[in-house]
Image 1 (tube, rainbow, N blue to C red):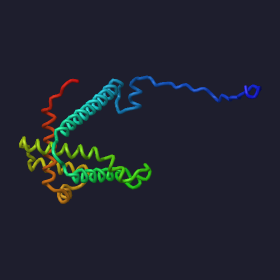
Image 2: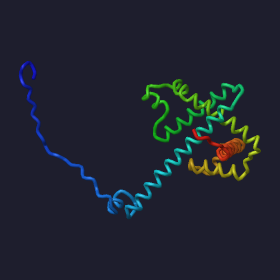
Image 3: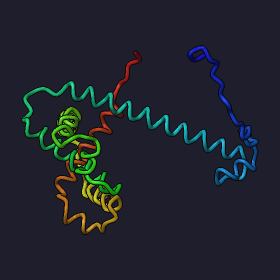
Image 4: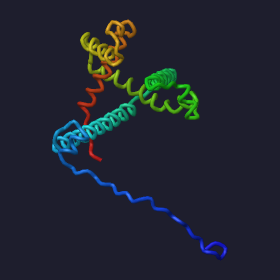
Length: 201
């Protein structure tokens, strides 16, 4: 009641709708996928989920290994190394945005941020990356891990394919010595992962 008087609402019902789920059969599988049978579709969904879980587990494993490596790095690391890594991360971020039709300045404007805030946010990851790379470079040296000419050529080919460029173009833009260092670091990371011993918590 409102001020002693009853409140009356009038509602006009235009209709009732019921959600009818489709039958899970071969016809359903054909409608929602490229498979002819429901069993094939189910098997594909299961494989996709298992692959996603495996990739997630691999990422968690890699993160744990990196955390251990970083914790083992001792000594004074020049701040300029962290600054350079942050700048590289900002550049990579800008390139990803450009590939999506945006740019860093526009992104920062619409997120009510600025380059200084972004660099502050990226710094912890930059520190982690620098320490991880230094640890892996040391491991590569201790284990005499090398990058063959074929390793370098394969890596340059990957870069060329990723950016849809000719191999010769990539070779004119990158340092083969730098690529060789990257390959050795990658091999060291694989070496550490293959030889890591995990304890159940």
